Length: 94
Image 1 (spheres, rainbow, N blue to C red):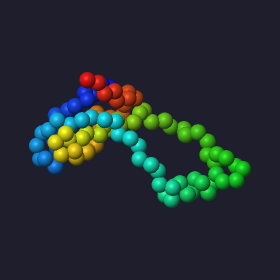
Image 2: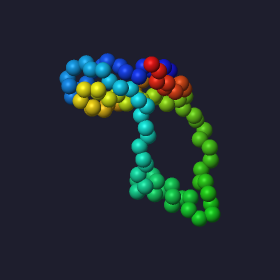
Image 3: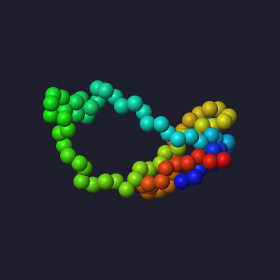
Image 4: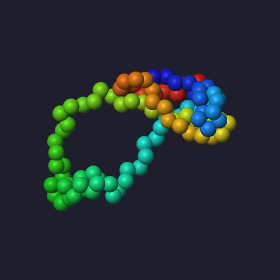
């Protein structure tokens, strides 16, 4: 899926349409003390290794997310691309 490097769209801080830089959204760092992480480590510690087998159902794809940065006020916001799930990766072009 091809997306332009710059989009003119609404900025909530400026309260008007401004040119915005487009970039891919980076995944945040997982919390080490989250309940799921602690549970997973507790179940896999020792010599047992993996606790559960393969997942039976696979999702069709992920919803692609973009980060838009206003060139006027530098406010960042996220935008989901498309309605459904997609297998295509976001490609930022001129």
